[in-house]
Image (cartoon, rainbow, N blue to C red; front, side, top):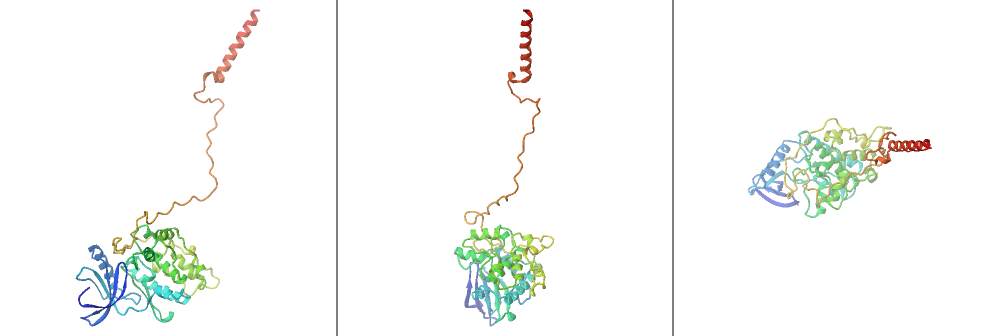
Length: 369
């Protein structure tokens, strides 16, 4: 950390970064400083590129990047304004699930943030409820900010329960070690909003292996059963984002917004269901988050877990029952066709000839008398 900064308070620490409140002796001002736990050149280059893109974006939904650089010890850091306002979404959910009004505000402002970065071909890659901060006393006054860019799958500690929490919103393609793209963010957004309405993660698991299996198998309860306190369209819209097949999801936040209906569906109109969401035409090219850190730092946009003893592969799908297949029968043989290899004395033609000879001999003997 540059010598001009004096640490006033340690705010948070996870497996990939440190968050501190610091005072700049040159500017005589306080700032929030996030110091990443990496000195690898390729990782530093990825972070530098990411935050250079974010720095030009001006939005109340994103933290303003004041400075992004490498300190004298080779660690990358990012400086944002202080104070750190509001509370995280998990802290908000400690009192219970969000109401319909709160959900509308949260979802709308998160779509604002993601739409802005997606339009600039930026992928978050590791969106979780911990990346969301909310300030304001009532929903009409809420200010929602999206953070957590570049921190990867940051966990609160080394225990597996912390890893499960860090990975709980990762898209299926990330579990299969494919790069994160905008469709991955849409899936993660669905998981975040599911948790906001249900008050529990979409995929509840105790181990990483179980979590992976549930994401790939789409093993989660219908949100409508866990959030009966909100209109049906809200639950249906969230479920339409959590789709295993990436190509069946909205390709970016702006497309997801098209089916978001804060005012409700018209009177008499059928409620939206996941099957009613038509996939947009075309396939968007994968957009790789410019951070490629190894498993030890866990900041990559793909999950650094190989299929093996720790995380098992998905079992092969079972064959669905159907009508029995007809058994192929051998072609019928003609009566004149004889099987190959039959003994000579068993052949009908030989038997007839022998019988004729025998009858002829008997006839000759009888005529001599």
